[in-house]
Length: 77
Image (tube, rainbow, N blue to C red; front, side, top):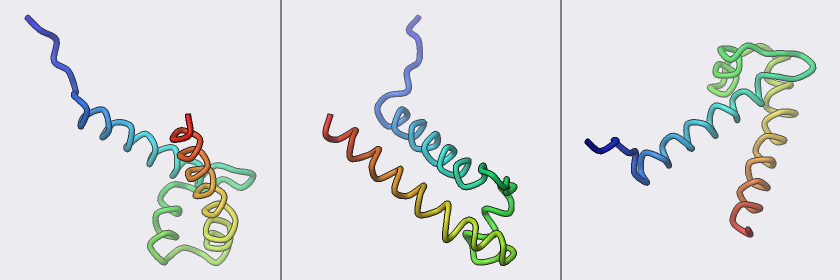
């Protein structure tokens, strides 16, 4: 009996889920921890003034830049 395999689409889905999970964790963890629920609320337009400043102005640009740089390095080999 053969072992079931994920295939290329399954592997890409798993990797995509890992990237999204790490991205959200990077928005949540720092000197001032913000719960994931608060991160989701802030990204959807809610949240407190402090969480909006912390996430949208400080952590989100850093996380997006890290994602782009990592992707560029992966493509370049």
